[in-house]
Amino acid sequence: MTQVIFAVLVVSVFSFFAYSLRRRWLQMTTIGQGTEEPRFDNILSRIRDVVVEGFFQKRMYTDFGAAFMHLLIFWGFFIVSLGTLETLMSGVFPSLTLKNLLGSESAIYKSYIASQTWTNAIVALAIAYAILRRMFFPPKRFAGLSRHSRLDAYLVLSLIGGLVTTALFYILVESKAGMEGTANVLWWMHCLILFSFTCFLPYSKHQHLIWVWPNIFFKSHKGTGRLRPMEFKEDAESFGVGTAQGFTWKQMLDGMACVECGRCTAVCPANNTGKNLDPRLIINDIKEAMLDAVANPPEKRKQLIGGIVTPEELWACTTCGACMQACPLHIEHIPAIIDMRRYMTMTEGNVPPELQTTLQNLESQSNPWGFNNQKRAEWAQGINVKTMAETKGEVDYLFWVGCAGSFDERYKKVSRSIANVLNDANVSFAILGTEEKCNGDTARRAGNEYLADSQIRENIETFKKYKVKKVVTGCPHCFNTIKNEYPDFGFQADEVIHHSEFLSRLVQEKKITPKKGAVESLTYHDSCYLGRHNQIYDEPRKALASASKENTLREMPRSREKGFCCGAGGARMWMEETKGERVNVNRAREALASGAKTIATACPFCMTMMRDGVAAHQKEKEVEVLDIAELLSST
Ligand code: SF4
Ligand code: SF4
Image (tube, rainbow, N blue to C red; front, side, top):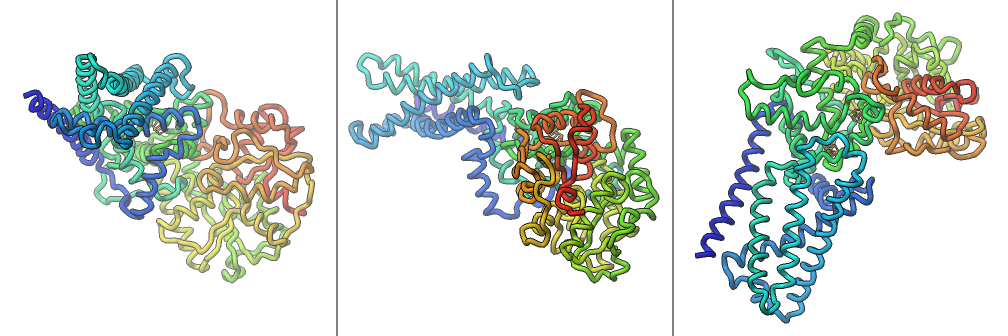
């Protein structure tokens, strides 16, 4: 009779578990009605990602202590699950135990018992450490967790702790004479904790244990710097995402998979400088919007933008990508933020006034400042630079100058340095001159997909007219957009290269000889759109090292993959920054602390932000900000 009751319990608990997960999956896929990109391509590489990222948790090692503890619990859980399986089987069929099947004296059975004993003990210790850590020395990234989230974590840790300690003590007393009653109590305690955990899991934030696997499998295989194109449906009443239904099923999955570890928040430049933006909360907001849509009829649902999430949070993002790089579950923050910006800009017209001016300038003059576009090539007066029209496109490279390189007084000097280096190296190139229009980065990141679409298509027409095959850009944002986003609009170049990489190549090919020891000492600030979004870290460094008398670079603590944004990406260049510390002031402090007399950059936005940041620290007379091209140019 006991076996029958136990069997009914097991079937009921696991049926409830399966039912809860199926229900949740259906909610995600029915509420998330946005159009998702293909996520079933590259099946083999997706399976490999699940193994590397899921089982070996590659991204966790940025915090070694936490990663080690998590790995112990994770792998330990797999091993003790064998014991749990045996417990369930023996509950239904008492003679079906490994002891009976293998023989209590067999080496294999003894090894099994030893592995269970040790693993249960190790996991119990890891759980105790995790609980004590949360209580007495929580990492900074746990700040901001809701009370509900904290209680959830304690409950789940306690349930796992209960599972392993009851299993451990059961193993220890099981074969002791006179301890049968205690063993029986421990066995039942273990089973009841297991049943409670199984029923609670799909409703806990630890349901990430389930959703992490599909989330890694379906992760984006496109670069993080690329924004997906927006569908323009003729009968659409709104654009972008303004309700839970606007998100895609994958974005819903992101919301459910998030474990609230705060790794994204810990690296967010906006959050670190006192802005309201918390990328963990943005993902949690998607989940909240979904659960709200599940629970309430449309008229009773919370407003997404202005209710669940504020416009201020959404506009604070620099699209630096640090959050997406840090997230162990490959959650995609930037697309969600931009989807909601698209709604604010295109559906509501709710754009910060200063950004509105920039968008108007882009529309009328195709540059963010509103300069007369006919003056786009004036920077090149007096130096040997031809236009595509003059050369009839018969050159190897289009030098894509960009708006800053064409109009910003400081960056016009950089354009001249780039052109001089290209001429020194006998590179065959030409510019578009007045035929060049803004590449679309700012409009896209400001959520104005209509404007970006027209700019991009106009540029592509011009590219096609001159049969452009290779592009060298003077700006990481232009580089990223032309390389990673133009293919979605119908232009795929044979090569798109940023000037830092191109100049580094020219140095290696000995086509240019940089002036050695041009400056006293040098540090290099990674642009997010070169480094994090396009993994260009080494080339600028290789080219730069000999420019310093020290023959090396002074690296900042936050460099390369850990680079800290200058604050200007994601159209933030064109918005006021009134809350907290300015991101560029924070970054400039770090650059100044390196003691280097020159800060090298490779981006017009970074240059402006670093110069302003250095000035804010009143060091502009002592520390210079130069572009990599200026450091390599002989003139
Ligand atoms: S989004 Fe990723 S990094 Fe951020 S809290 Fe969630 S799981 Fe952690
Ligand atoms: S992209 Fe950068 S600024 Fe935006 S939420 Fe992520 S870390 Fe923060």
